Image 1: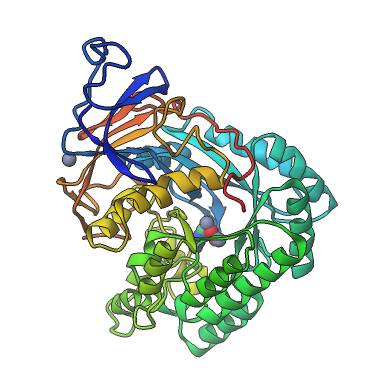
Image 2: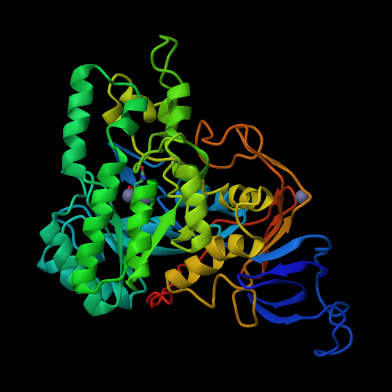
Length: 473
Ligand code: URP
Ligand code: ZN
Ligand code: ZN
Ligand code: ZN
């Protein structure tokens, strides 16, 4: 009551009536359309005066307890979704991993077992196809009917998840037939592996060299190749975690040609850079391993080369369609530190599921994006992109009552011992100050964050059976 409801298309003083798990009505303050005393009859009233009322965040790219890099991502579905709730994210879409030899359907079953009964907020699944073969291609249609309507392939990580161009072509043909979204990790992994080997042989073993051995040319080239294969096959293409401005130029060109191509970026690529990793030291002999905190792929890019500024610009043009976290947390101790003396052994990934809404709101405060664009890229478009609209991503009658009351006059200090609920022993955004605050979070009508208190529970979050993407041309 009394807040400004922000949607992708505008902002207005409106009251929101929740009945059970869904939104029953959105009305002008003082409206008598639903009877005179709407609020007197309510079980509870949340005063949102002076605050924004937005749809719960939809994070379309997370990896809870994912086996990767010889270890497992440190957030479980329980800890990771609780951290998401603290940060105003009420839906995640996580990745089921198929490793060679497994049936897609079996891996989906295994992931259901991991998540069922554990999640604080609702969740969906994408499927990683680790082995493109006849059986996997057949399995795709079964997954679509089970609400898993997007498939990720890797042009990076030879020997782990890697697909050849021929395999990509076949998977894209199947995706096109099904109308399913093909998600691509676009980096030329074959060439990168040679650069990595050469760097290690030279003695360039510090975390900083993870980034320099995955230069932007490798991302631009792979992005272009993926776009051409998608063009040929007619598959809708979603390029995940884009960090190079040149890759985005490829995406923008394809979109300009009317192709169903979408770019996702992440807060780390908008805010952090290779220079920070360099600044963390590697030559001074005083540890020099701090840079491992920010080892992820695609890597952080050079600020001097202008990638961050261009990413913000593409966020305004629409060629960056969504902002997800690629939340893939690892601790420094006993996980990242496996790569001391050899950066290629550092598990790749950054945790950030808790901070996306805040970090992107700071983009509003600093004049980089509009208030409405914030909601669009963090809530509404991810919901449409991944087939969950209008159940998720919007405040309108009939939608799930996933609602965040956001205080633009509040403040959030990010860091260990401050706001930190992720199961990580460091924060990638330590010291970041946000001019805003997540005050209240509702997940399907239940208040799960109330001021400084967590009122949610493991198992409240349910699996979301997704439809095909609603964001295609
Ligand atoms: O470094 C990253 N991004 N780790 C997560 C796995 C992936 O490629 O998305
Ligand atoms: Zn990836
Ligand atoms: Zn990822
Ligand atoms: Zn506050």
